[in-house]
Image (cartoon, rainbow, N blue to C red):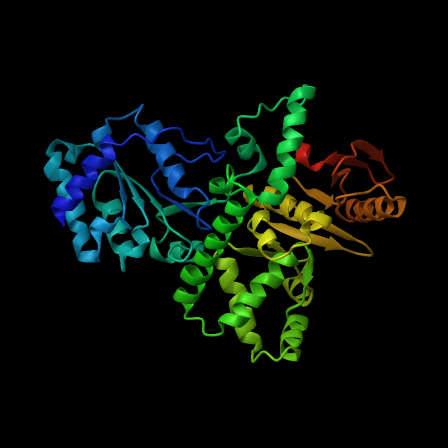
Length: 424
């Protein structure tokens, strides 16, 4: 195994990665912590590693940098005891590096039982900067805290944001240029429906759907069924369809339980809670609570449901071309969630879609169309209620076309198109 590792080490140092898309993540090249990249499958974690390696090569000797993919078939079958061959092989190739800092990029090391023992030992005993990635089935944020015991900082990696998508498409962002805005708006219409998984960007609609279906099957089988030993596959599959079709809506677990019972599913409440929890741990779905001053009150209210990517909805809902409202709200959620915001919805007489304290307090409503006066009044009234409750002088109404500032007795409401808000 040591000789195989030597070959992989040399191969990684000779490898050129070609053109890599720019992402917005600010990941440090040097820190006392192990850097962990976590997130849904195919969101670009490995490409981010390659970009980090590329940047690092301008600063340190290539021989000090090693990338290993532990799902490489040449390493199969690999066990924890074999990992010593990796570090021994490196120092046999470069004995003079024992006194120098080395940079190790370990992709899918989590596929090896007991991987954390090896990673902790490297971190504690040699001069090393460690970067690790893994699919969510093997590397969850909740597990990192236990496995690496305070030694790591984790970065959640999502599919491409709209700004990253424009960068990939080489579309210049100039909001003072009519030409640039035309390209941006055209790209937004595609991004809204098709989502942010980079492998789908240059494909036909049919191929896009096949790729997304493969991704969904990977998540279902690898990250959920295999990991947790799911037996009721029919229920899980139905739940996934229900959630993607209904993203951006309120979900009551008790009502959902009663609905599945009435449909003839043999399901307990604990099973339902578990399945939903598994989907969230796999970065497939997210739920946010209502804002209340007590956790008990939050738990009594329904939660709002969101999905990792708009593209998946087309797998389950043939009518999405006639209803963009859910896609708009889900896009807004992902924009805020990428920034690490702790999100809530707020409700008194009317509902406000998002409240967060990130970068100061923010209140945001999302409505695809507000051309009807009744719709516009409802959205504004809800924001006024929220502004008065939180004592805020400003809030946002994100929509498709309209752009203005509405002055109210509570403060100003900035009405802005979604495509522009995503670039702010």
